[in-house]
Image (cartoon, rainbow, N blue to C red; front, side):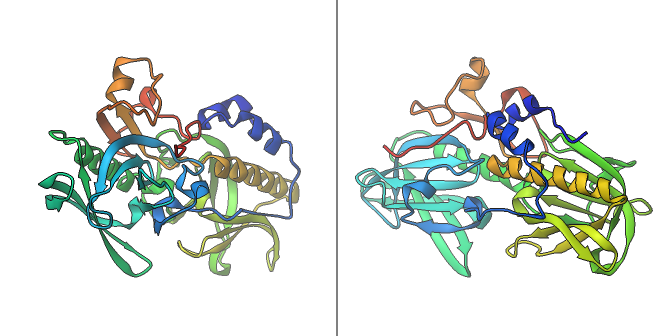
Length: 344
């Protein structure tokens, strides 16, 4: 059967209606993924509202209403938003003056003294980032005295981002499988396991197993489980059928800013190949509509209430924990795509 249990997609951020439309689509010769702004991979300035607002799969973890960009805009009040992908600073007088610092670009975080026109000599958060071959330094000063919230939140979310890279990056020959079973990531679900799949990378046929989840496509060898590949959907550019010297194969392409590859998988018979390709195309489309980036957080408000807190509440709340793969509290997740960050 090619049908999926659509209610399971509700955990992806309320996309069940869109998922229903996708799941009814027919097999495409090749599905090409639309271009995506990967907010965690870049440093950008003065972005339009369509990009400075949360992108698909991004949610705001904390908002600090009184933060000064002490290096670039010393003396100007702004607000700093910490999301699961980046830091966003907005000037209070004009939101079009802003900056976005992706967590992938950040090399170091430190607490040092700085001279603020609004607070004088005080502690500030120093951020060193590298993007496009250029080095950037940002200095953020919390204008609210006697609170470590700026430091603790940013450092905790950065650590969670760094430990959850398997959700976002391609991994080859990793410790992905144990005794024939895929090691699942938090919130990851298996939708299809296909045995007898030949990996044709470099025109060499290695038999193995393909696993399709809500996060990634995984293949591992039968004879050697350490010969494997984990390909998150956000790194995939195309999925479709392609002719080869081995016959028609399932072809998967990946982004050039990652480990650029074009891998073919041979599956027999042809009907099974088409069925698996259709399933992969559908899962890719649903996953790109609301990607799961792997950063999970818990706040005090979520601990004391039944989880009815807004992700970007204006009222202060302290971050209790932020974690990636190492730890997981399934009942205390901040929903992903159900949150939208708007500039007032």
